[in-house]
Length: 405
Ligand code: SAH
Ligand code: TMP
Ligand code: ZN
Image (cartoon, protein in one colour):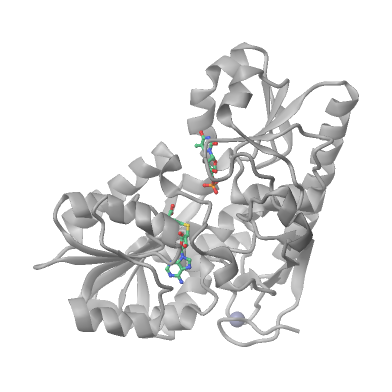
């Protein structure tokens, strides 16, 4: 049995999604024979309450000079990070401010600090996306963050007022080294502010497609409290976010340095009430996931029988779990439409569904569009009024499988 990555207690997986490829590993046909697969399984640690993958993919296989995810493809996310940066600028910066961000990607958040002339440093191991940030004038180094790097940053730049990370902390298996690094890096009143998809939303919405290689952890306030307390830090506030299908933003400071907002206890009480501390909750989650798969496959087969066309919308990393776990193959769906040039002309990981430029979708609307980018649903539906007006229908599977009329 594998051990919990946080507290070393042996854990048993509560669900197996079977063999999975790299979620962002879009590929060409000549690469099919060498595609890397691993067992995608999730476990719950009854000791420290952390939900986590029980088999991991090496980080260099996922984050490299050919990384396919560019944050700035979503204008709504750009707006989300602009607002966060404004709050940080207004409320959390002291004299001679310094802001560090891990997983800074193409600079979607740090651009707001760079433009304001605020000292900043992006830490982004995927060299191609880091280069886009540098082109925008954002100081970025291409390394994986850990305790050793934190020491080097302090030696060169001094301590930070804010240490930020969006959709990246949950990606890092060696979290103790990260949090130990944060402890070293933060000024006495400094704050770590990070956000990741929230376990409470995954359980409530059966959004199992949040589970893929990059997401080593599925955080709750409970499990994050336990982790940071091991390093003399504490959660001082939490703020639920609607982005990415439901995320949680955590504010963490040195123990005793800040008053703790009532929202922390309130959210912990909600988690208890939801049963996030109980193994039975995850047995129920598995049953809901299996039902979701059955329903989606029945719907897609029925539509095929009627001779209607289905295309998929947005080649998200999440969709790799859906296509491979459910068994959605190119005989059921024609292609995936996506606006990211690096994904276009390639094939989806594992299921090998062709990824085509968005223009293909517009040129000849399918009867149904399977919304793989449901987490960007509002932005996408607002943009696709013409598809609906032409009689097109959306298929969604979160929170349940349905056709939106
Ligand atoms: N913050 C952006 C990007 C999230 S994708 C957003 O929310 O849109 C996750 C990013 O984290 C990737 O660009 C990946 O290269 C980077 N990353 C992965 N492991 C990391 C680590 N150990 N330290 C710093 N960045 C890391
Ligand atoms: P994500 O869910 O992993 O953030 O991936 C988003 C993907 O969706 C990215 O490949 C770009 C694509 N996308 C579109 O194709 N059209 C859109 O309108 C949006 C918002 C995203
Ligand atoms: Zn544990």
